[in-house]
View 1 (tube, rainbow, N blue to C red):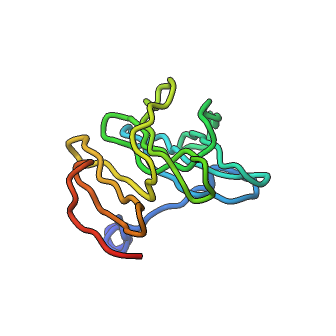
View 2: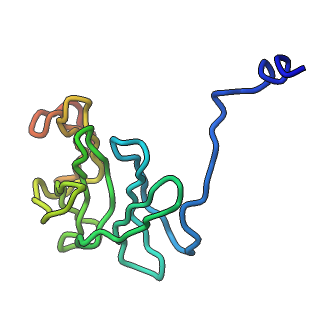
Length: 147
């Protein structure tokens, strides 16, 4: 009977656990390289978005001392790619900052999205002069469209 129960189990089924009980808007969340920490950006009581980490067991929730922005990606080495607010409503600057702390280092303007390759290089989507551009690595255009 136990063997039948084991065969009917679906080991690949995800399990969900609530990490926060606050109300608001969660803009992005990613696992850190250790697989036990979740990094996220959220707006709990209205703008702006702030950055947080939480353990998957729900303990040790803490805010990160970063400027308001949106989480884009977490590298295999634990570096964050974040979008910090620029001068305009939709203008964002890509910045890099270690998960362990420190000041963000601004990299590029007008970034809509970004992600890390397994080798630690950034791919970005930028908006400039009415065009959207996919670059990988940064500075090398792979694709461009209007709109």
